[in-house]
Amino acid sequence: MNKSKTIKVTLFAGGVGGAKLAEGLDNIDNLKLSIIGNVADDEMFHGLWVSPDIDTITYTLSGLVNRTQGWGLQNETQNALSMLKNLDCDTWMMLGDKDFGLHIYRTERRNKGDRPSVIARDIAKLLKVKSEILLPTDDVIQTKVKTEKGWLSFQEYFVKEKCIPEVQEICYEGISQARANQECIETIQNSDFIVIAPSNPILSISPILEINGIRSALIDSNAPILSVSPLISGKAIKGPAAKILSSLGMRSDSLGIAKFYSDFCKLIVVDSKDRHLDEAINALGVSTSFTDIFMNDIDGKIRIAKHLVKLYQENLGT
Image (cartoon, rainbow, N blue to C red; front, side, top):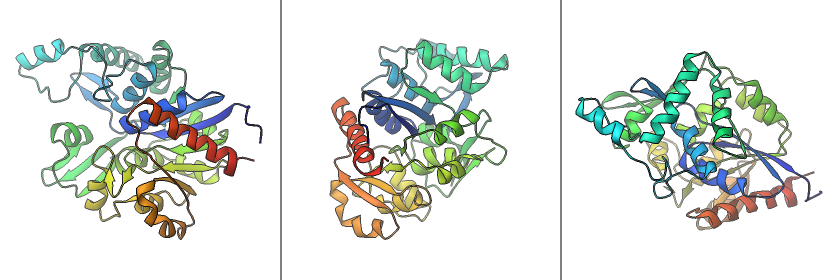
């Protein structure tokens, strides 16, 4: 195939882990990147609509992200949060002052009736993001986590409770009524290849896949679909993925990830430490590619991105 042509790549991504791979792909020449992000962890705080995963991707690709923590903004202050605390408000959701500015902008436009996907596109453009950031739906869907403390919103489980309670059940509130945005369906249909980021499969990727029209578009797609495992030696690179998979009675290793996506994804990139899973993954009808999948700096992010492009060019492209 012509290796100099522009390659159209669609990335399904959650927050920090997805943003890492997005940044790697964003730095590859001759590549047009579209990112379909997770909106199921969106929630209202202090009267403002907050979209953590979409904002993490946006901040990362704009170069404004706090590199130390992988989310939020650099050189951030918490004066607004301090005042709210003085007023006896719950302040467990860490929102910086500049972050508040974005949430005010988003909420004002939502209140005017603007489409959330258009708002997200405009925010990315105004913050000089090169790649395309897409919302999978304009409908409200929210991940709910059942624990011994009862049903919690995703942010209550993830931030307030620090992922400590045992997960008993997960549901995506509003998912049955949600409809995929046409822009996302067309992007999937027009992709040269599609990547599932090393994001939490249950909390970040599944809420996208379960939106009416998304999974079927992937199954019907002629584009090769690859996934990058979020687990190394059965442990999550970041976050509670392995813990949640185990709690729900699923395999918490790269074989479990391959099985989870096997109805549409036929190649998974797995860390070299997990070569012993090769035969079992192949038995699912899923091919494997082994490499170092740890992305702790920009070089690591670009290295994985180049690995994916090379897989497409040498093995999957037509």
